[in-house]
Image (tube, rainbow, N blue to C red; front, side):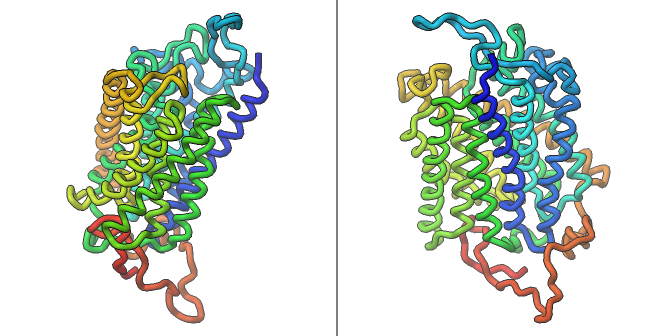
Length: 462
């Protein structure tokens, strides 16, 4: 019953998704100031440690245990992984043509622990994504506490809603309401990961307040090559994120792989065209950001749409997200590294466009969108899923962040913010600025995201 090839692919995909968190750390780390890069790296890295432990203790059980509250959260039947060693998971199959029906766990069963590790990596990167919204001003231990609370009360329940399907961990297992009752489509986490993280980033940016001097002083990316390296690692790891969500070395995995590639490529072009039209020059930072926007948007759709539709999704995501990053200046919230503009907006775009482009010719377990004769019903379901996750995440995150801030544990002092969070929080600096030349050795101007949006080539002093 165990499918060795599928198991190998899921484990390899888990490793690829794990690499995304260090990749994200470099992507974010290159965009912050030189004096806060270590803090940014650590905010991402600590997610591996905290979520990794909580996932085994109770997180997986909350996300994928048998439903306890009408589709809201799983019970604690899988807590501590005591019942998972040697256990298989899969779906029973009905008779199709001359192929006989196969009882649970199906003909292509996976070890439960392979699925546990694959889903762990999703749980790790989701809070890490939020960190970019509050770069340059958060206490490390306050952030660590936030991650522990947030994954418990926000991510684990939302993962249950979206990813926990009836009958996967047992023939009588009951999962979450979005997957099984609403039947909104989300192949790899547009709602549970990106809309969830984007809404949380917006809430935290409001709670912690603006950086000192913002928006006049927006800071500047201290290492653009880091940004491009991080985006490249994210793109590489994202193949595990999306193709691995097929849970098998299958045609569907190949479709997801293809769609991930072409949508991301198209999004880079979409973002750079907007930069050219708006600012007169395409930037490296824009190319990296466009790639991430495309990856975000195609995530929920990659297993339900055709490659041609993926190109459209990518172009739309790249162009719209390039414009959306300036919303923070219009509405006055300091989202340091554009988590809202890229992940919230990109996640919404990808989730909603499923309602237009989904086709059962790609995935028979999905649905037909508006452009394939399915009417408006799937779009309504997609909007309901996106809106529910957005509101739940925003409200709960705001409350968690507000409580930690009021307890004095979240925002660094004004002195630490000005002098450098790395020294204040970690007693370290990323670079030796006391070389023989006596200067910092950094150029005085480099592309920044200014108050006009992304890609402005005005210089900004360190």
